[in-house]
Amino acid sequence: HHQKEGAGVRENSIPYAAFGLVWKKFGEALSGNREAAGRIDRVLVSPLDASDNGVTLAEAVTSLPAEYTLSDMVDVFMPTFEEDVSEIDTAFMEAVLIAKRVILREIARSEAIISSRKEVERAYEEAPDKRLIVFQKDYSWKETLPQFSEPLYVVHPTNRGVWFLMCVRDNPNTFINRKDLPKEWAGLRDAELAAVTGITDAIFCHRNRFMAVARSKDGAIALARLALRANTNNQETSSKQ
Figure 1 (spheres, rainbow, N blue to C red):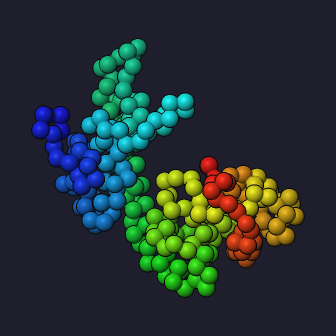
Figure 2 (cartoon, one colour; figure 1 turned 180 degrees about the vertical axis):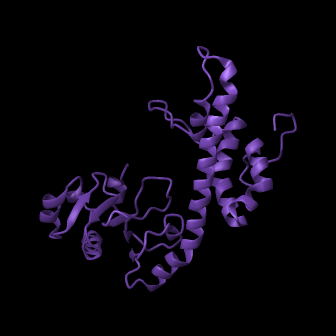
Figure 3 (cartoon, one colour; figure 1 turned 90 degrees about the vertical axis):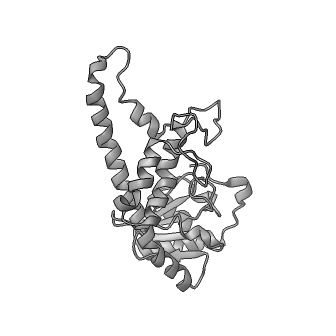
């Protein structure tokens, strides 16, 4: 891909680099199906290829620190000028182990998103109030549910024995909720949150109002219904996580 003619360009205009070429050939076999391979190329491989080809994907906000990327994580294993360059092969293999783990986890996540899709869509279809979607398991919903225009909140269990109330976002890569949780809840915990909401098992509301927690499913649903009735102007109070 360093040659003058390059190595080809994706439909999304990001040129292929070495990682992308390898994934293009072996990704479907490694991830088990074409859909998973395509998602992994979009979220993991393409951004790395863009960096390798000198393509900027997002404009920097110069007054803030740059985002620490996966490319940075790999680069940090390169020996510095104060270190023995003969250790570069050892450093490379350390980076390979981490990169392998990331790829395997991204394959697992893609499989979960694909297998969750029918359950997410079924929950939406069966919801009596399409603004509130209740899941019986912690499905991967953030890439599927935004295709529907009505949902504002999701309630789901966690492996920590509590239930989450989460805000839905049109774009899961941003921090702009369709509707924030009420500002009166922001940053409250336990008795304080219970006093404000009247929900006795309410545990916590994030200060940026994108997530709340209750000890029970009924408690989380009750919080969601209160939030649905609240007047929240997202044009002025969109959450910034």
